[in-house]
Length: 225
Image 1 (cartoon, rainbow, N blue to C red):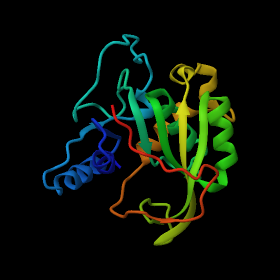
Image 2 (image 1 turned 45 degrees about the vertical axis):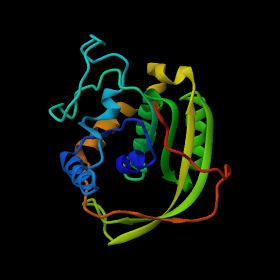
Image 3 (image 1 turned 120 degrees about the vertical axis):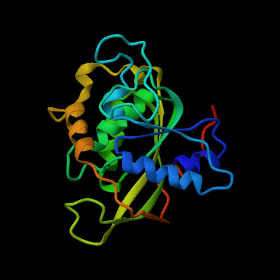
Image 4 (image 1 turned 180 degrees about the vertical axis):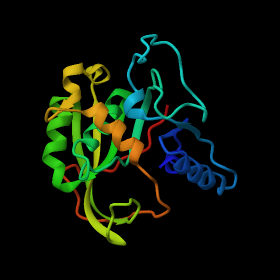
């Protein structure tokens, strides 16, 4: 996704992942281009780190570079556009919402995100009512071939119906209240930290095959700074 953002003429791209192996794979992919694509890679847990204030209360210190601890806050991280493929929330209920909440606190322009089609109504409701989205639109429905990348995956690959969403945050989205950080009584931040610690990135890649269009019918474009 980082490479795609550069190729779509984004002015600057920051790639964030909690897993160093995933970042190393990304570096290799970026360097395979001629010339190599320029992306700033940061090892961090975005769900923990996107708060406009640090856990230590300082609120001003910036975190950057590959030496950043994965659990450290990436203070005041803001950008025009967020593009992500979060956990689907199947094995860990609420993980998809936790990442979506993080995206709303980061993005100022638009969010492009993949979610299971079966969660469409839930995702729209959460985005509009809890995260104060100005717009929430399904751009396309895809068939995603998910290879076995985690220990709990029993089959070599599974085909999953996935929605490509485009969300537009409002000014309120960056300041989601603490009571809105809970979904179905669970602490989303604690849940997302647990997901991030246990996540392991494999070498497989999913294949998106164009399917029927969603409600929007439009296409997303990489944002410029």
